[in-house]
Image 1 (cartoon, rainbow, N blue to C red):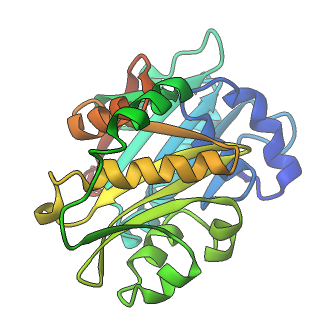
Image 2 (cartoon, rainbow, N blue to C red):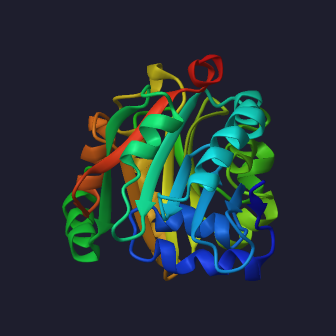
Length: 285
């Protein structure tokens, strides 16, 4: 069976695998134990291959791809434990990224592991550019507003207490082990309309000073009004006030998200593959 790495010293062994990767903030948050997820490896010491599950976000296969015993156990673990748990938690799509050791190729492994049913998409990473953000802020300071009736707020304990629907708490606990951890290390903003939280923008994963952004306007009726841009701008400011760095990653078909990142001074990087399929389809095959 695969080895569950649940101690910081054990998970630290995987740090060299993720250095410089597109998903390092997400994986890093799981490895240091701030965000919810699990880490499995082929062996306890000096692992050569590993599976990282960042809950409500992504699965990652890292390291050597020619580890046949490990590969077979990954499929078994996904089918018997992890994907049913993900379904119960409200996830319906398996999303997967791979980071091979140099000279390895996960493509044939994935084809076999998922019976050739994985679809391939593209993820778009962004790198924050402070100078561009400050220029945008100067240009938009007089025009950045939200429609009447909407209020953008920084998430603090008082704002959370006012959220009777507990949307903010639910969003935080999708990713963080506790609300206390979020208030100590994370940052976030929300939009309120007639006393109801209709959108959030929070740190969903965190590694060191690096914050991965998660943004959501929950009901389509509130979209297209500039709320996401206003929330994201306030969120970026909050992250910067902590002397930290915001990160932004999205899918290539999320044109609104790409546009917002561009407005806020993020430089778009090269898109890279992400693999996906409905969880239930995989469990049924």
